[in-house]
Image 1: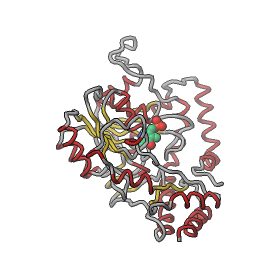
Image 2: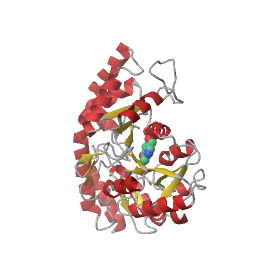
Image 3: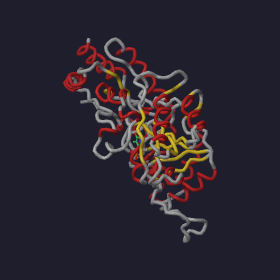
Image 4: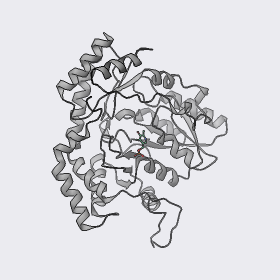
Length: 373
Ligand SMILES: *Cc1c(COP(=O)(O)O)cnc(C)c1O
């Protein structure tokens, strides 16, 4: 079976650099908030054009830190998609807020602006006190910020971009990290820019928000570190992970190009037998996942046929959040998320990583065409 995401191929490419970087940290001994953490924050901010990058312990912590800073608590609602990884809504619910689920567009898998507008009206009608929106840049592609930003501005809601799967992606010539009030990302190993453990970051141009986030990630510490001025968390990024990420960031632009070449080849090879993912005009995805859509009832058979051919697949997301045990009780717009439910049945993700060679890819495409054709 070929790997679904081949982290070993990347490791082989930069093993010497990573080992040297880790050794430097072990030798200098500043394991917590060492110089590599600050260097990484500087480089990440420069990479995406944000004024501030605040690193933290995970993508989930990144979301939680922003929501803490914005005062999310019982009695407020935050609008977010259901077709996403649990952490998006979890951070809201953990703080006692109400995630209000919005539908997605079937072609890009990202938040449907019309559904968002309907959800805002419904949340207000139900006196749920909506305060903000979390848009998710699913599978590596930016959400439609051209539509979503003006809605949030008009409705006086803050906008948080959950780019856990999409750091490095571009929307209308701008990298993610500069949209909305803040952007969060994850350095979980399987994400496009992954560490060798957990990690995350928040990007913002807001000086005051950045200061609060830096305080919250260290227990809410104040200027005097023995005077905690707010309730925070232990949310720092390890220095060793920062050192590893610095080496990975250096090859990230090349990896993004490789991912896009692979995505183009998939689209070319599969468009007659399945629906390839749509990339919106002016967007560049980083292809955290390459997710095709199939006709009803086709998925299980294709999964089995590909497995037989030594090709692993993954299903993101077979059970959307609004149908999961912990989230069922939270409201969905109109009580029904038609596109989300449809995608949960139709979507299938194929192997995707920058080191997927043309030959391996032809094998995947060939096996899929043979089964579906
Ligand atoms: C992975 C992911 C997260 C959480 O990131 P962790 O670093 O695993 O905590 C949040 N949102 C989305 C959309 C994700 O894919």
